[in-house]
Amino acid sequence: MKEQLRVCTVQMASKAGDVGTNLQKAKELIKVAKNQGAELVLLPELFDVGYDLDVVKALDYDTNETLEALKAVCRELNIHIIAGVYENGKEGKFNTAYVLDDTGNEIAKYRKNKLFCLSKEKEIFTPGESLCTVDIKGIRFGLMICYDIRFPELGRQYIDAGCEALAIVSAFPFPRLEHWKTLLKARAIENQVYVIAANRVGENAGFYFHGKSCIIDPWGTMLQEANETDEIFAIATITKAQVQKVRQTLPALEDR
Image: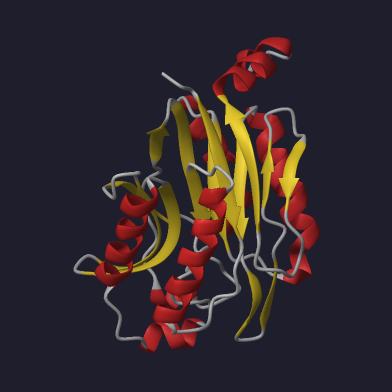
């Protein structure tokens, strides 16, 4: 088994309620990432509908249309996608990260556990009740969405489930940029995992999003980091061997 993966975190400015435009923009960025060797692409939290939650609440929206469009991209480009999507279905409304494989199959989904207390998420979404792991090319990922990164116990649960990487999709705003950078490094260092984090840019409903999508290795080293404003991405290769090396060099997880 390969046990290494070229990963890419896309940051984009989603337009509130404009699913068609957001999908087209995502497709274009994914194609550029694929040309640079990406095998897995992360799209930010609610990339499809944006983060104006009043608009989201009133939106007549079919999640399946977004998923079918993303599945077609997976098949066309032979690429995996983890995407932050508004799940609107029979079971309720959820802030969800879907995982699609390189043949366009949905292989996992994670519903955000910790709904953000300073916006209207709790008025719209139902919180998820479980965590989600998924294996891609021999590397096990644990999924998080934005506010989840403030809760270190989630990372520990993922370590106990055998994860070597945390995949995080976010809409993290400017007043807390330093929190973003510190929390992501902390989750990487304390759990000795890769952190692959996709954040959005632009503005919705008075929230200004700071980008800084990044890939951090299990030692806490920043491998790649995007800027605060542009619709670009960070890309790097992650390996299972590096996780094992860090954990052998400093076996802190064994001393818990």
